[in-house]
Image (cartoon, rainbow, N blue to C red; front, side, top):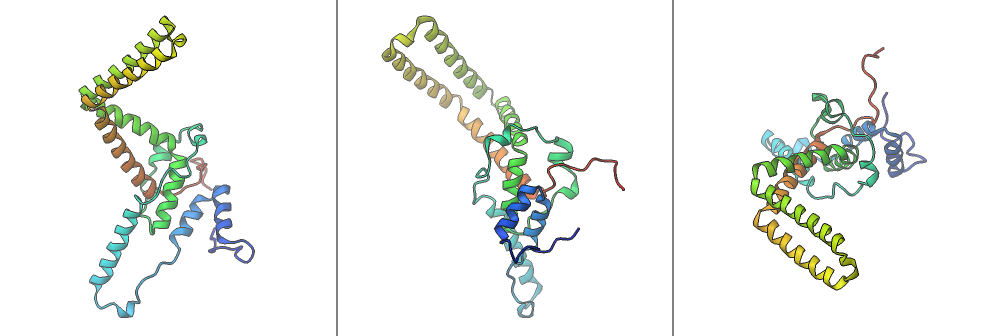
Amino acid sequence: MAFSSNPLSLSVPDPAFESWLRDSGYLEILDHRTSSIPTTYSDPSTTTSANSTITSGLISLLLTLLSLFTFNPFSKLTTEDFSGQTPSWSYGFVGCCDSYSFPSSPAQARLRVHENVKRYARNYATLFILFFACTLYQMPLALIGLLSCLALWDGFKFCSDRWGLDRYPVIQQCLVRIAQFVAAVIVICSNVQMALFCALGVSYTGMILHAAFRKLTPAKQPPRGRSK
């Protein structure tokens, strides 16, 4: 079924039409619509050689990639995106070869990132936990430091409940500050912050690239084996 640029352009403005497509679940149409937005190119008659065309194409691709790191991918993310069911890893998250394409413009890349981050939020969160666990496995000192901090705070909570420190708020606050200082020293000395930074960097880069190259598809995939 072919859709024109905006069949209701006489009565509905483009932002409202795009909002209706997004709310109605026609993300693949919205994705195709952003890819068909005309961009400004130089007049072919003024092109002196094919090298200039290739150069302009490479510059356009480079600008599209750089635009992925110029906006906040979590601006449309809400807590409700983490409360739903996790999309399928094979058919939903990974997909097939036809499920990926290079974004044709920064606008399409931004649209894909925002919508895919909302849809696959639980998948990306799981991958971050996996990357962080692998990083801690490669850095045993950081793992020991993290476990030491958890044990420190569990011990502090146990002692606070056992000794009734709630009745002595001044002493409790002093002990909290001491525990925070000790935990900060353990984190710095064991390079826990480096492990966290590595996991964040790898997971963020993978999330941005996957969300930008993953085509927008309907939220409910058609069942297999029912082709007419």
